[in-house]
Image (tube, rainbow, N blue to C red; front, side):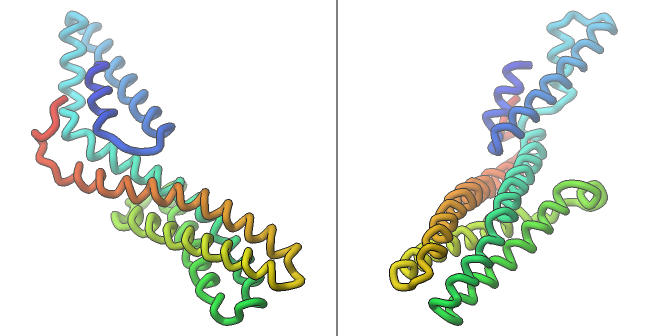
Length: 214
């Protein structure tokens, strides 16, 4: 059983906490299945082997687990965007006084990122998640929208920092630029991890059932 969960863990990528919890649940399920077979009179070693066979090969189980972990990472990025993206509106309001209409893309990017984050959180948790499947394209949309928002944060931080040296509003612009830089770091990290999760998830779903052993 330990070898089975280790092989499964090696085949999966995802948020550490969610992955650890998932593997612990699978291990507990194997133990329960083993105990049930032991109560039926099987030797514990044979019972453990049969429990593993009941769960199926790692190659069959891994894609399903990876999809769940990808959704977990998508929620993580959406949470970061929901917290950080609205700050782009503040940056837009501050930058608009200095750079005029050219600051408009920040407002658009903030609005799109916030709406997508809210939609993601609604469809990956709560009542909607229990009634409707998560759209297959959602993780990719969140990953790249989060990336765009993080780039917007970086641009806003640079713009606000430069503007602060040329205006009397520097006591307001300088802290805003610093907060934009921090928001960029938080959101870009989560978005980058989300992008890295996309390729493994697609690869696992396309592999032949016999390509992994468990």
